[in-house]
Amino acid sequence: MRTYPSFALLALLTATACGSSPSPRDECRGCPQARGTPRLVGGSVTQSVAGGATQTLEVFDQRSADATHCAVSSGPTDVKDTGAPTTGDVWIACRSGAGGYSFRITGLGDPRAFAIGTHPLKLEQIVGTVCVPTAGASTCAECAIRLTSEVKATLVIEAAVGGVAPYPTLVTADYRRSYRIELETGLLGSSATPRTGDGVCATVRTKVTARFEETAADWRFDPNGPCPCAL
Image (cartoon, rainbow, N blue to C red):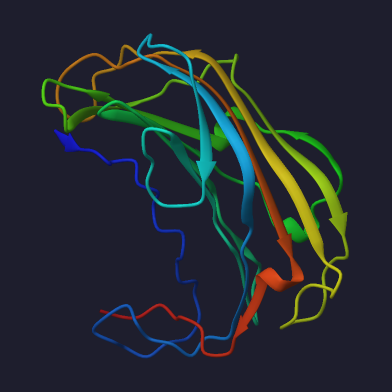
């Protein structure tokens, strides 16, 4: 059994590789790093779970969902003084009764390279999980969602001003990217055995729109950034 909220958003801040000294904890510093963090600026979710009534929920940028909001967040773009940028995923977590569901969208790429336009996403870029309420109101059984060809996901770049600058600034002073993620699933269901607990995996139908913005002010340079630490 799993206690809700099992769909609290995963921590998005992860250390990337660079030289470090042994440390007993994952707290060592000293790796210069520039980071750009997209801001959630709006959106909505229309959902039906387990055959229930259709609900329309707002979205907000926090790490847990409640009865009237879905939690949506986008991971940062991290750039070290050497190596390629590391880009984050988009997480969508929604609650339904004592259960809920989540989607992780991967491989969007570096926002600095975005150009205005519409870009369909592939099914393999999306991972979905649903947590079905069980006999106890505070527990649910977790199931993987089997995505079908009805699922449509799109990255729409609405504004693209400015671009890349030399390290460590990394973006021009007028830099701005405004974009949205659109996800429409149709009716998803699964007869798979739940990953945890007992029960039947629920159906999910959802339509998500989440808008993000990133400007030069959302980029920060830390000359004493985190480093991976030996245990």
